[in-house]
Length: 192
Length: 192
DNA sequence: CTCGTGTGAGACATTGATGTCTCATTCGGC
DNA sequence: GCCGAATGAGACATCAATGTCTCACACGAG
Image (cartoon, rainbow over all chains, first blue to last red; front, side, top):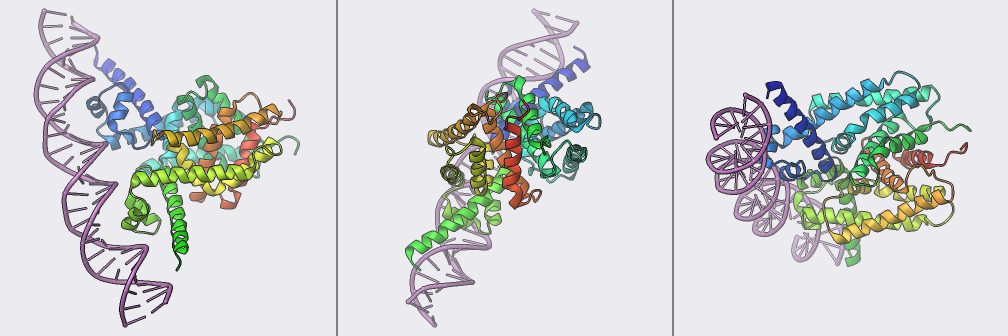
């Protein structure tokens, strides 16, 4: 096995562990390293080999979530087309990291790290800008603030990810459920 | 000072502590007893005098949240009038306990206690029934499930409470923001 | 003023999770 | 079959939070 192949294999494992960790930590932040390890199908020792410690795991979650979400934004091309369509694309692209985003939104007081906060602030700004654009274009309602839309977006993403995890919403319906509910709620209604 | 007056005073303190605890724990479940105490303006010793321990505090939060939310449901008279109006009343009545509800929704894996879960299950059932009634009456859309509406309801309540806590949404706008967004998202649109 | 209650500050032992270690085993490539 | 890398299981010390305690002080009622 080549060196790069080994690295690739480990990378896949990291992703799986991070997703499982996010799912558990979202609903019980006190989940122990041992429980996370078992949920990911590995031992605590191995978990410690992949992530130096609990803090390192959380930070990896944050970095991973921010990076993947930023990537989703790029792919969704938020500036193109009308805002509702862009929002649909964003939700579709963000779906794979929904669990991680839910965790990060929920537990956003873990670190006062400036770098992490800066990363989040930029993502927030980009989303809020999208909502504001929709308002300026007349697509989104004006009686609610763009900041609230942003918070609601995160809240629905988190609730959706958990619903899928609990089997209350089908995975294939997640994107549709979030997008339709959010868009219906923020769209400027026609008759006004 | 009479005995009942003392009890009443302590009850007020408890409520304040619980609200503060919910606000903090929602965004950092590992918040220590000491931090909670200081946020509530009391010492750790006093906190322990009011609540036997951390578990007792969490349980008190759950019981308080369930009781107050059930009370909000009763006051809102979910069975009367059309479903959208009932939902508005529910959101308005639930606003004072929004922070607690957000915490309970977020950290719902803390105890496997049968009694607590039973309490939640009943509340869930009542809300879901409301959404289902709205669907049957033709007020709410049918392409999304009532179960998802329920989860979204909790998610928006939590996001809203946090937004107010962070100063991103005015307290007086909270009810309106949640109700309008949720109702807009779940209403059956007219043109279909 | 005096008493009683509630509180704040701090000391202390306990506990559970954490982080580090070793050793035996498994697995895949050769 | 052999070998190296990765893993699982477990032992162990460490540490932070917890829970319990004592003591001194503030404050309101009488």
